[in-house]
Length: 246
Image (cartoon, rainbow, N blue to C red; front, top):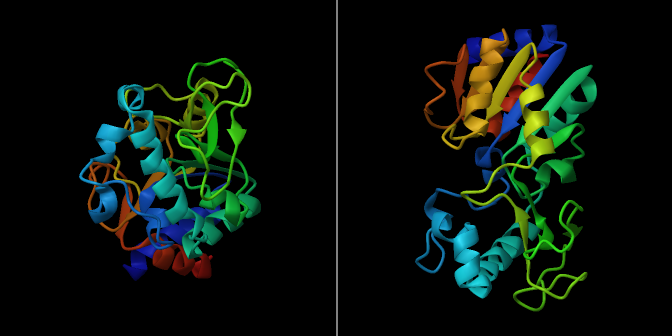
């Protein structure tokens, strides 16, 4: 493993354009419940059955109870060493883009620059009826949130979490930014299962464009057999070790 970390450090040292894709594994050490882990069940409901427009249409209060529970858990969490290293690299490299699938905003708390949150933020809301379509949602960091389901301050209709649900397309601007970030020297994927598209396809696109691709993850993923370098372990442990080697 040490030789792999040295090889990654060498690639980082020589890279001008760095892109980092992060997933739930980066936030796990902060105590954020993982989407597909043992904490994935909530009141016998799978997240995949709650994080959909159809579920919200059927029972918005149930969906909001789940999101309120998640917000309460995340509010107690703080950025860990992996977030801090990524934030430092985002400031140190001439051209660094961080693309995250996470909605917890711990990258924001760590001070990460050039951050694209392709799945949105659990701390932001938008109007379910789209009364302000095309306008940004609003931020609400209250815990507890208050009335469930919350209401849109513009029209009084239902508000929804401003996150991307299953069956929904990524926001055009975020998707474009993520795709543009694949034009890099080094594409590093950290703590992501590499099964949710289109994020899972970014590493392959980066490789197609000539980037060196590397993966840090606790377990093998579908990307493990295609990247140039893979290192097994927790991001909060390995990223600081790589930083020490720079």
